[in-house]
Image 1 (cartoon, one colour):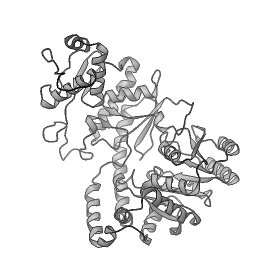
Image 2: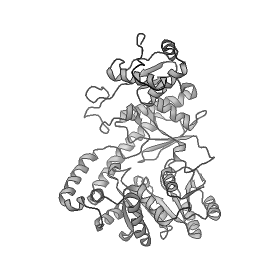
Image 3: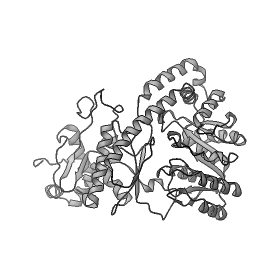
Image 4: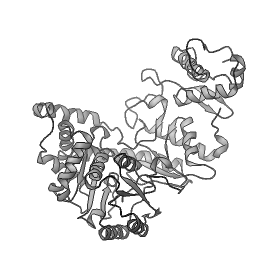
Length: 470
């Protein structure tokens, strides 16, 4: 683009921001077309009378907005806007995979593990319609009574291996996260310690901190949570609760052995610690290991839901707990969330009791495994962990990559992934040099191949292939 210059007179503010806004305006108007190369930073800086650093900040802002991409040695190029009518990358109805969903600002969402789109919308629409026809009064009011069928659905969905929860210990919830937080709020008080592994689903520890609970960290190894360190933490901190994901832990995919589960249950019993067993990903696996609850049923709460295997948008979740805890947890859930909407709870129970949820889970697993096959082939030779049926990968980075730097490099190439800090439950000195990426949210298998291809190229090139400025 040798003859183009930005108009910096139409807006106010910092020069780099005005420059970015001007370029975005010209992209929207078609003055700068998709695929066009922006002027080199040094040339544009000379033309408009500013520094190279100012132009670099403007180009970086455009990358964050998803409008351009930059590669060392090649320059900065305008990305295409997705349009299903004209975009040649939009799939036709015969392409295998799921329906097309635009990624935010042209990015591929490898930072989510919600269930893939396998046509849930049509099924849910039908169930919603029938629920509205059958229960118009309940929909127009607040939920004060919980029908037995909601508990029956929870019993069915949370049952795995030889674990069969009792209906009098089931609490329907607005998803698994809300289930865990309700248990924390009901059974601990501000100032109490809750134990987390250094790497885990950290949004629970963050949420617990918002309501005044403190975090105690316990170490893990390649086999999962260390029972001896858990005992040390119990003796020193006197925690009230331990949160863990014994099967296919997020993000490392470690599954605890039966021996470790038994040891953890023994320590929890000795120190009177309540156990929260998040089985959200375990529900997707074929792992035969007995659930943690089977080793300490009197003090273990099992949480699960539909988000990873059926549909995250219906916010379906259940919690199985000792019956003595049920009322307190139900009240805490209402206080934290404002109450369970009848419409969502009824839809979720119908999906489960009709068998439709199980069928969608099977279809989701087929799609997940097809995508994981692409990952395994593309990343062959690198150190990563993947588990059948589970929609994410834990990638151990080779030297000299750092987790945050690799995440930024992927972002600049249009792929959103999560670095290890996203999963740290607290301030930890441990460094893992890993990243997690999911394969369920991009709309097509072709998108998976493209995104994993970006990851592979960055791994092959090392830091020499990435620079934060173009």
